[in-house]
Image (cartoon, rainbow, N blue to C red; front, top):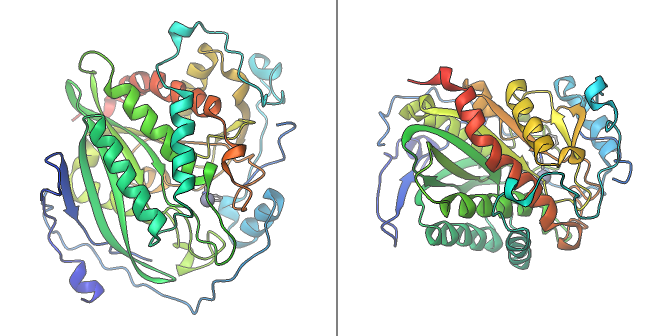
Length: 399
Ligand code: 1BN
Ligand code: ZN
C-alpha cells in the first residue's frame, strides 16, 4: 500500500481484545540543549490534509561516540540557532538563595508534610523502570518496543482507564515504520481535559545496548504511576485527564535535526496534535504537561524557556516550592524542542519538564542504577498537584 493510500485509511473504532480499548488507525501524513554540567548535581471528518513533500536524503545511520552535553550543544547550535541552548539565571531575590544549589543526589528533604504530597509510589515507579529496562532496547520497530507498548496497555487497563490506541505509519530515514500513541483517559465532571504526556520509545543505536532507563524509561514509569495515583483517588475529578504515551519521539539519525529536513523526531506528538486539530478534540484540551528524563538520581530541572508557556511553568515551580521540592526546580532556563512543540504550534499551552543535566544522556550508561524512584516521585507529586491550578488557569480556552 502506498503512503498516499495509507493516508486515506479511515479512522475506525474497533474492539481490540478489551472492551476498554478503542483502536484508531491513522496515517501519518507528514514525514516531512543541553546543559551545563550540574554542580553535583472519531471518525475524523477526512478533510484532506495537505500532503507534505517528503525529502528523504541518502542517510547513513552511523554510530557516534558518546557525546557530552557541551558537544551536543555545539552541534545543535551550528545546525539550528533557534535551538541554541540558553542557560540563564534568574537571580531574583526570592530565588537567589537556591540559584545554583546542587540538587542533592540523596533523598529529598521536603519541607511539606506527607499529607501535602500524593500517593505516588517511588518504589512502584522504579519497579516499572526495572521491568522496562529488562525488555531491552525499545526503539520503534523492535521487539522491546512492542513489549513495552503491551505493558503500558495492560497497566492502564488495570487502573480501569478508558484507552485510546492511535496507530499510524510514519516515513522515517529507516523507511516506513508503524508507531502507536497510547492514551489513558480518566473522566472528570467536566469535559475539558488536561494532557500529561511522555515518550516511551528509546533511541535507536546501531551498535551498543541502549536501554534508556531515564530517557524513555522514567517518563513512561512516572506517567504510569501518575495515572494509577489519580485513578485511585476517591470521587470524580473536576477535569478529565489524558495520560498520553507518545511514540517516535527519538530521531532515527543520530542528531535531532540531521535528517528529513529536520523532522526526524517527535513523530507521535506531531501525529497526535494534527489528529486532534482535525477531529476537534484540541479545542477541549486546556494544556499539556510533558515529562522527559525525570528520573536522574541527581534531579535538577531547568525551566524550559524556549517554547513552554511561562505561566504554566510558574504554576509548576510554585507547586514544587510549596511541596518542599524547590531545590530540584532550578531558577535557570534552557531551550529544548521536545514533544510539547507540536501542541504549542497548534495553540495548546504546554510545558516540558526535562532534566537535561543528565550526564548519561544518549549513552549506553543510561541504566537503571542512575535512576531514582524518589526523583520520579518529586516530579509526579508536583504534576499531580499542579493540574487543577493549570486547568483553572487556562479556563479562557473553555468552549
Ligand atoms: C529528549 C530526550 N530529547 C531527546 N531525548 C529531546 C531533545 C530535543 C533533546 C532537542 C535535545 C535537543
Ligand atoms: Zn533521547
